[in-house]
Structure formats: structure tokens, C-alpha cells
Length: 318
Image (cartoon, rainbow, N blue to C red; front, side, top):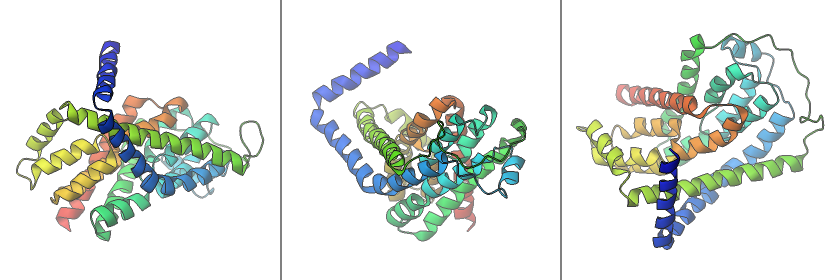
């Protein structure tokens, strides 16, 4: 494993040395996407989610019984709310913050992380639905299938979860040292987080270009082409899905351009699974808090399949 990693790093360094202009261009494209679409939408939410989460802003007591029926801690309600309105990786950061404070027990951490792993409505309705598909209906279908898949996965994993001990209502408090979190602390933490997100976006743009140059994407694209044989624009669908497994926004754009009846359901899969770039962003927060990467990625794939099925049902049944 170490030898393969070393060989991959050497290959990447060689490609950078041979064609620096090509890959700096890819990096610049990723940074431009981050600056134009991600930074303005994400940064304010990161600031206010940090202030809400670390100040101990507990969800309404009326939501606590609902969380307990799902065998999730009360803190999951706030994390899900932040994830549903803000998207990746705000929910993951909120879950990590709550876990570090002991508000989410280890036994419920993975299910809480999955429930709070959602894309924001601004991206689905505006960027994907409005801009890429030119349809408010498409955005609404994506958002519905996306959120329902998260809730459905939570229900499907319920039989495998353990009952949580009784929770005592906790008063509002500050950070771990008992001091209130200042506005400046929230802004500084959000700056660090949003820069981390930008780094992942730019890096995976470069990685995607490298993999395309050495032909590493061709086997997956060939498999998907066979899988979609008989569907309209099967080759374009395969190319879009392959790109989406690396970087979600690129994949969504390619799938929308394919113009196939399968485009929207596959887009639902891509935005729900997230692709390598978004998964890496989430795991950067979740792994230090105790979430294991492989179970999270595997269940995110299941969640993506659920979103695909829901979107396909809506599209084909109408």
C-alpha cells in the first residue's frame, strides 16, 4: 500500500514537472470555482454555525423526543438544521464540534454524521437546478430526493443502532474552557475551514486532470458506458458520472449537458454521494472526531443510490 502511494506521488510530481502550465491552469480553475460559487455561499454559514454550535445553542425541546425516537442525541437536530440550510461541510463541522464536547456519543456518531451530510438548497436549487438545468422543477426534484435519502438512510440503519442513555438538558454555555466564543473566534475558525474547502476543490481539479491525462478514468468510463447501454447519450452520461465521482460540480455540469432522462437521477446520486472532493472535505472534520472513513463512504454510496431511485421515480412516474 505504501509502495503504491509512493509511486502515485512520484507520478504526480513527474506530471507537474512535465506540464506545469496545464496543471496550474487546472488549479486556477478550481480556485476560481471556489471563489465564485463556494466562498460567498459557504463562508457566512460557517461563521454563524460555529457561533451556534460552540455557544451550545440547543435545539428546541420539542425536537428532542423526535431525535430520541430515531436513537440520535438531541444535538443532532441542530446539526441537521445547519446542514440542511448550509450544506457541505457545515453539517460535518457541526457534528465534529458536538462530538468533541461529548454531546454526540460514539455509538450514534456515524448515523448523525450521515444524517447531517447534505448539500445546501442554494446549490441544488440555484446552481444545479436553475443554472445547469435551467429548471426550477429539476432543482426541486433534486432537493427532495437528496433530503429524503438522508432521512430514509437514518430509518434503514435504525434497527442496527443502540438505545441512547437519557440526556439531561444542558444550559447554554461557551467553549470547552467555559468562556464565551467571541465573534472574532467564529470568523477566524470559519476562515480556516473555508480555506481548507478551497484547497480540496483546487486539488481535486488537478487530480482529475492528471487522471484524465494518464487514461486512468477510461476503465470506469467504459464500465459506466456498458451499464448505461441503450440509454440516450450513454457515453456522455458515463463521462459525467466518472467526473462526478471525483468532483461533484464538474460531474453535475456534464450530466446536465448530456440531456438524457437519466441525467437528473444520476445528478441526484452525484450530489448525494458527494464525490472524492466533498467526501474529503467532510472527513477532514469527521475523522478527527472519531468517524471511520470506510463505513461513512460506503453508507454515503447507499444514500446516493437511494437519492437516484427517488429522483428516477419522480422523473419517470411524473
